[in-house]
Image (cartoon, rainbow, N blue to C red; front, side, top):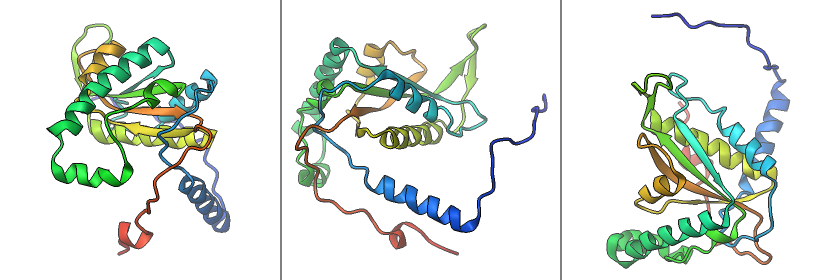
Length: 223
């Protein structure tokens, strides 16, 4: 086994405790303002913003540094229309009986249904794929990826945070099943769609449901 090469850590600067607390609390306050939006304005968003956000997602940690993810950024009106049509077909089946009563009851307060106009209205759809395994670019041999779901999930979290930091509203949309996304986006058989991240500016007068998040005491244990 070839030993990994190492070089000195650069880019890290130790910060005084008080400044660390201020930064951590400031980031919390910024992320606490993030809300899932379903009403988007059609206003364009520069491609450079999306490029930087996806590049940020690519800095996420991953099992054995395999980086088992791929992001397809869609701004084409035709492709967005195709995605919406296919997604709404699956959603009609979901709301029409595929989902159980409990699931539908849990969604009821959000007011969601099979209609997904945001898939066409928003300027960008970012389709997030996880690579179940890799392929050698020269031989085509199959390569093992590790902690695929966890690694790709962390990358998606980075992406959402980066988009929010840039000033965009987002929505995570997870139609089920999502095989149609691989077909529309032309992705290989080793990749499986995880979600669509809808990104853009909220529509004027956009509203969001009244919800609460669990407090720190409910989501953490200190030993």
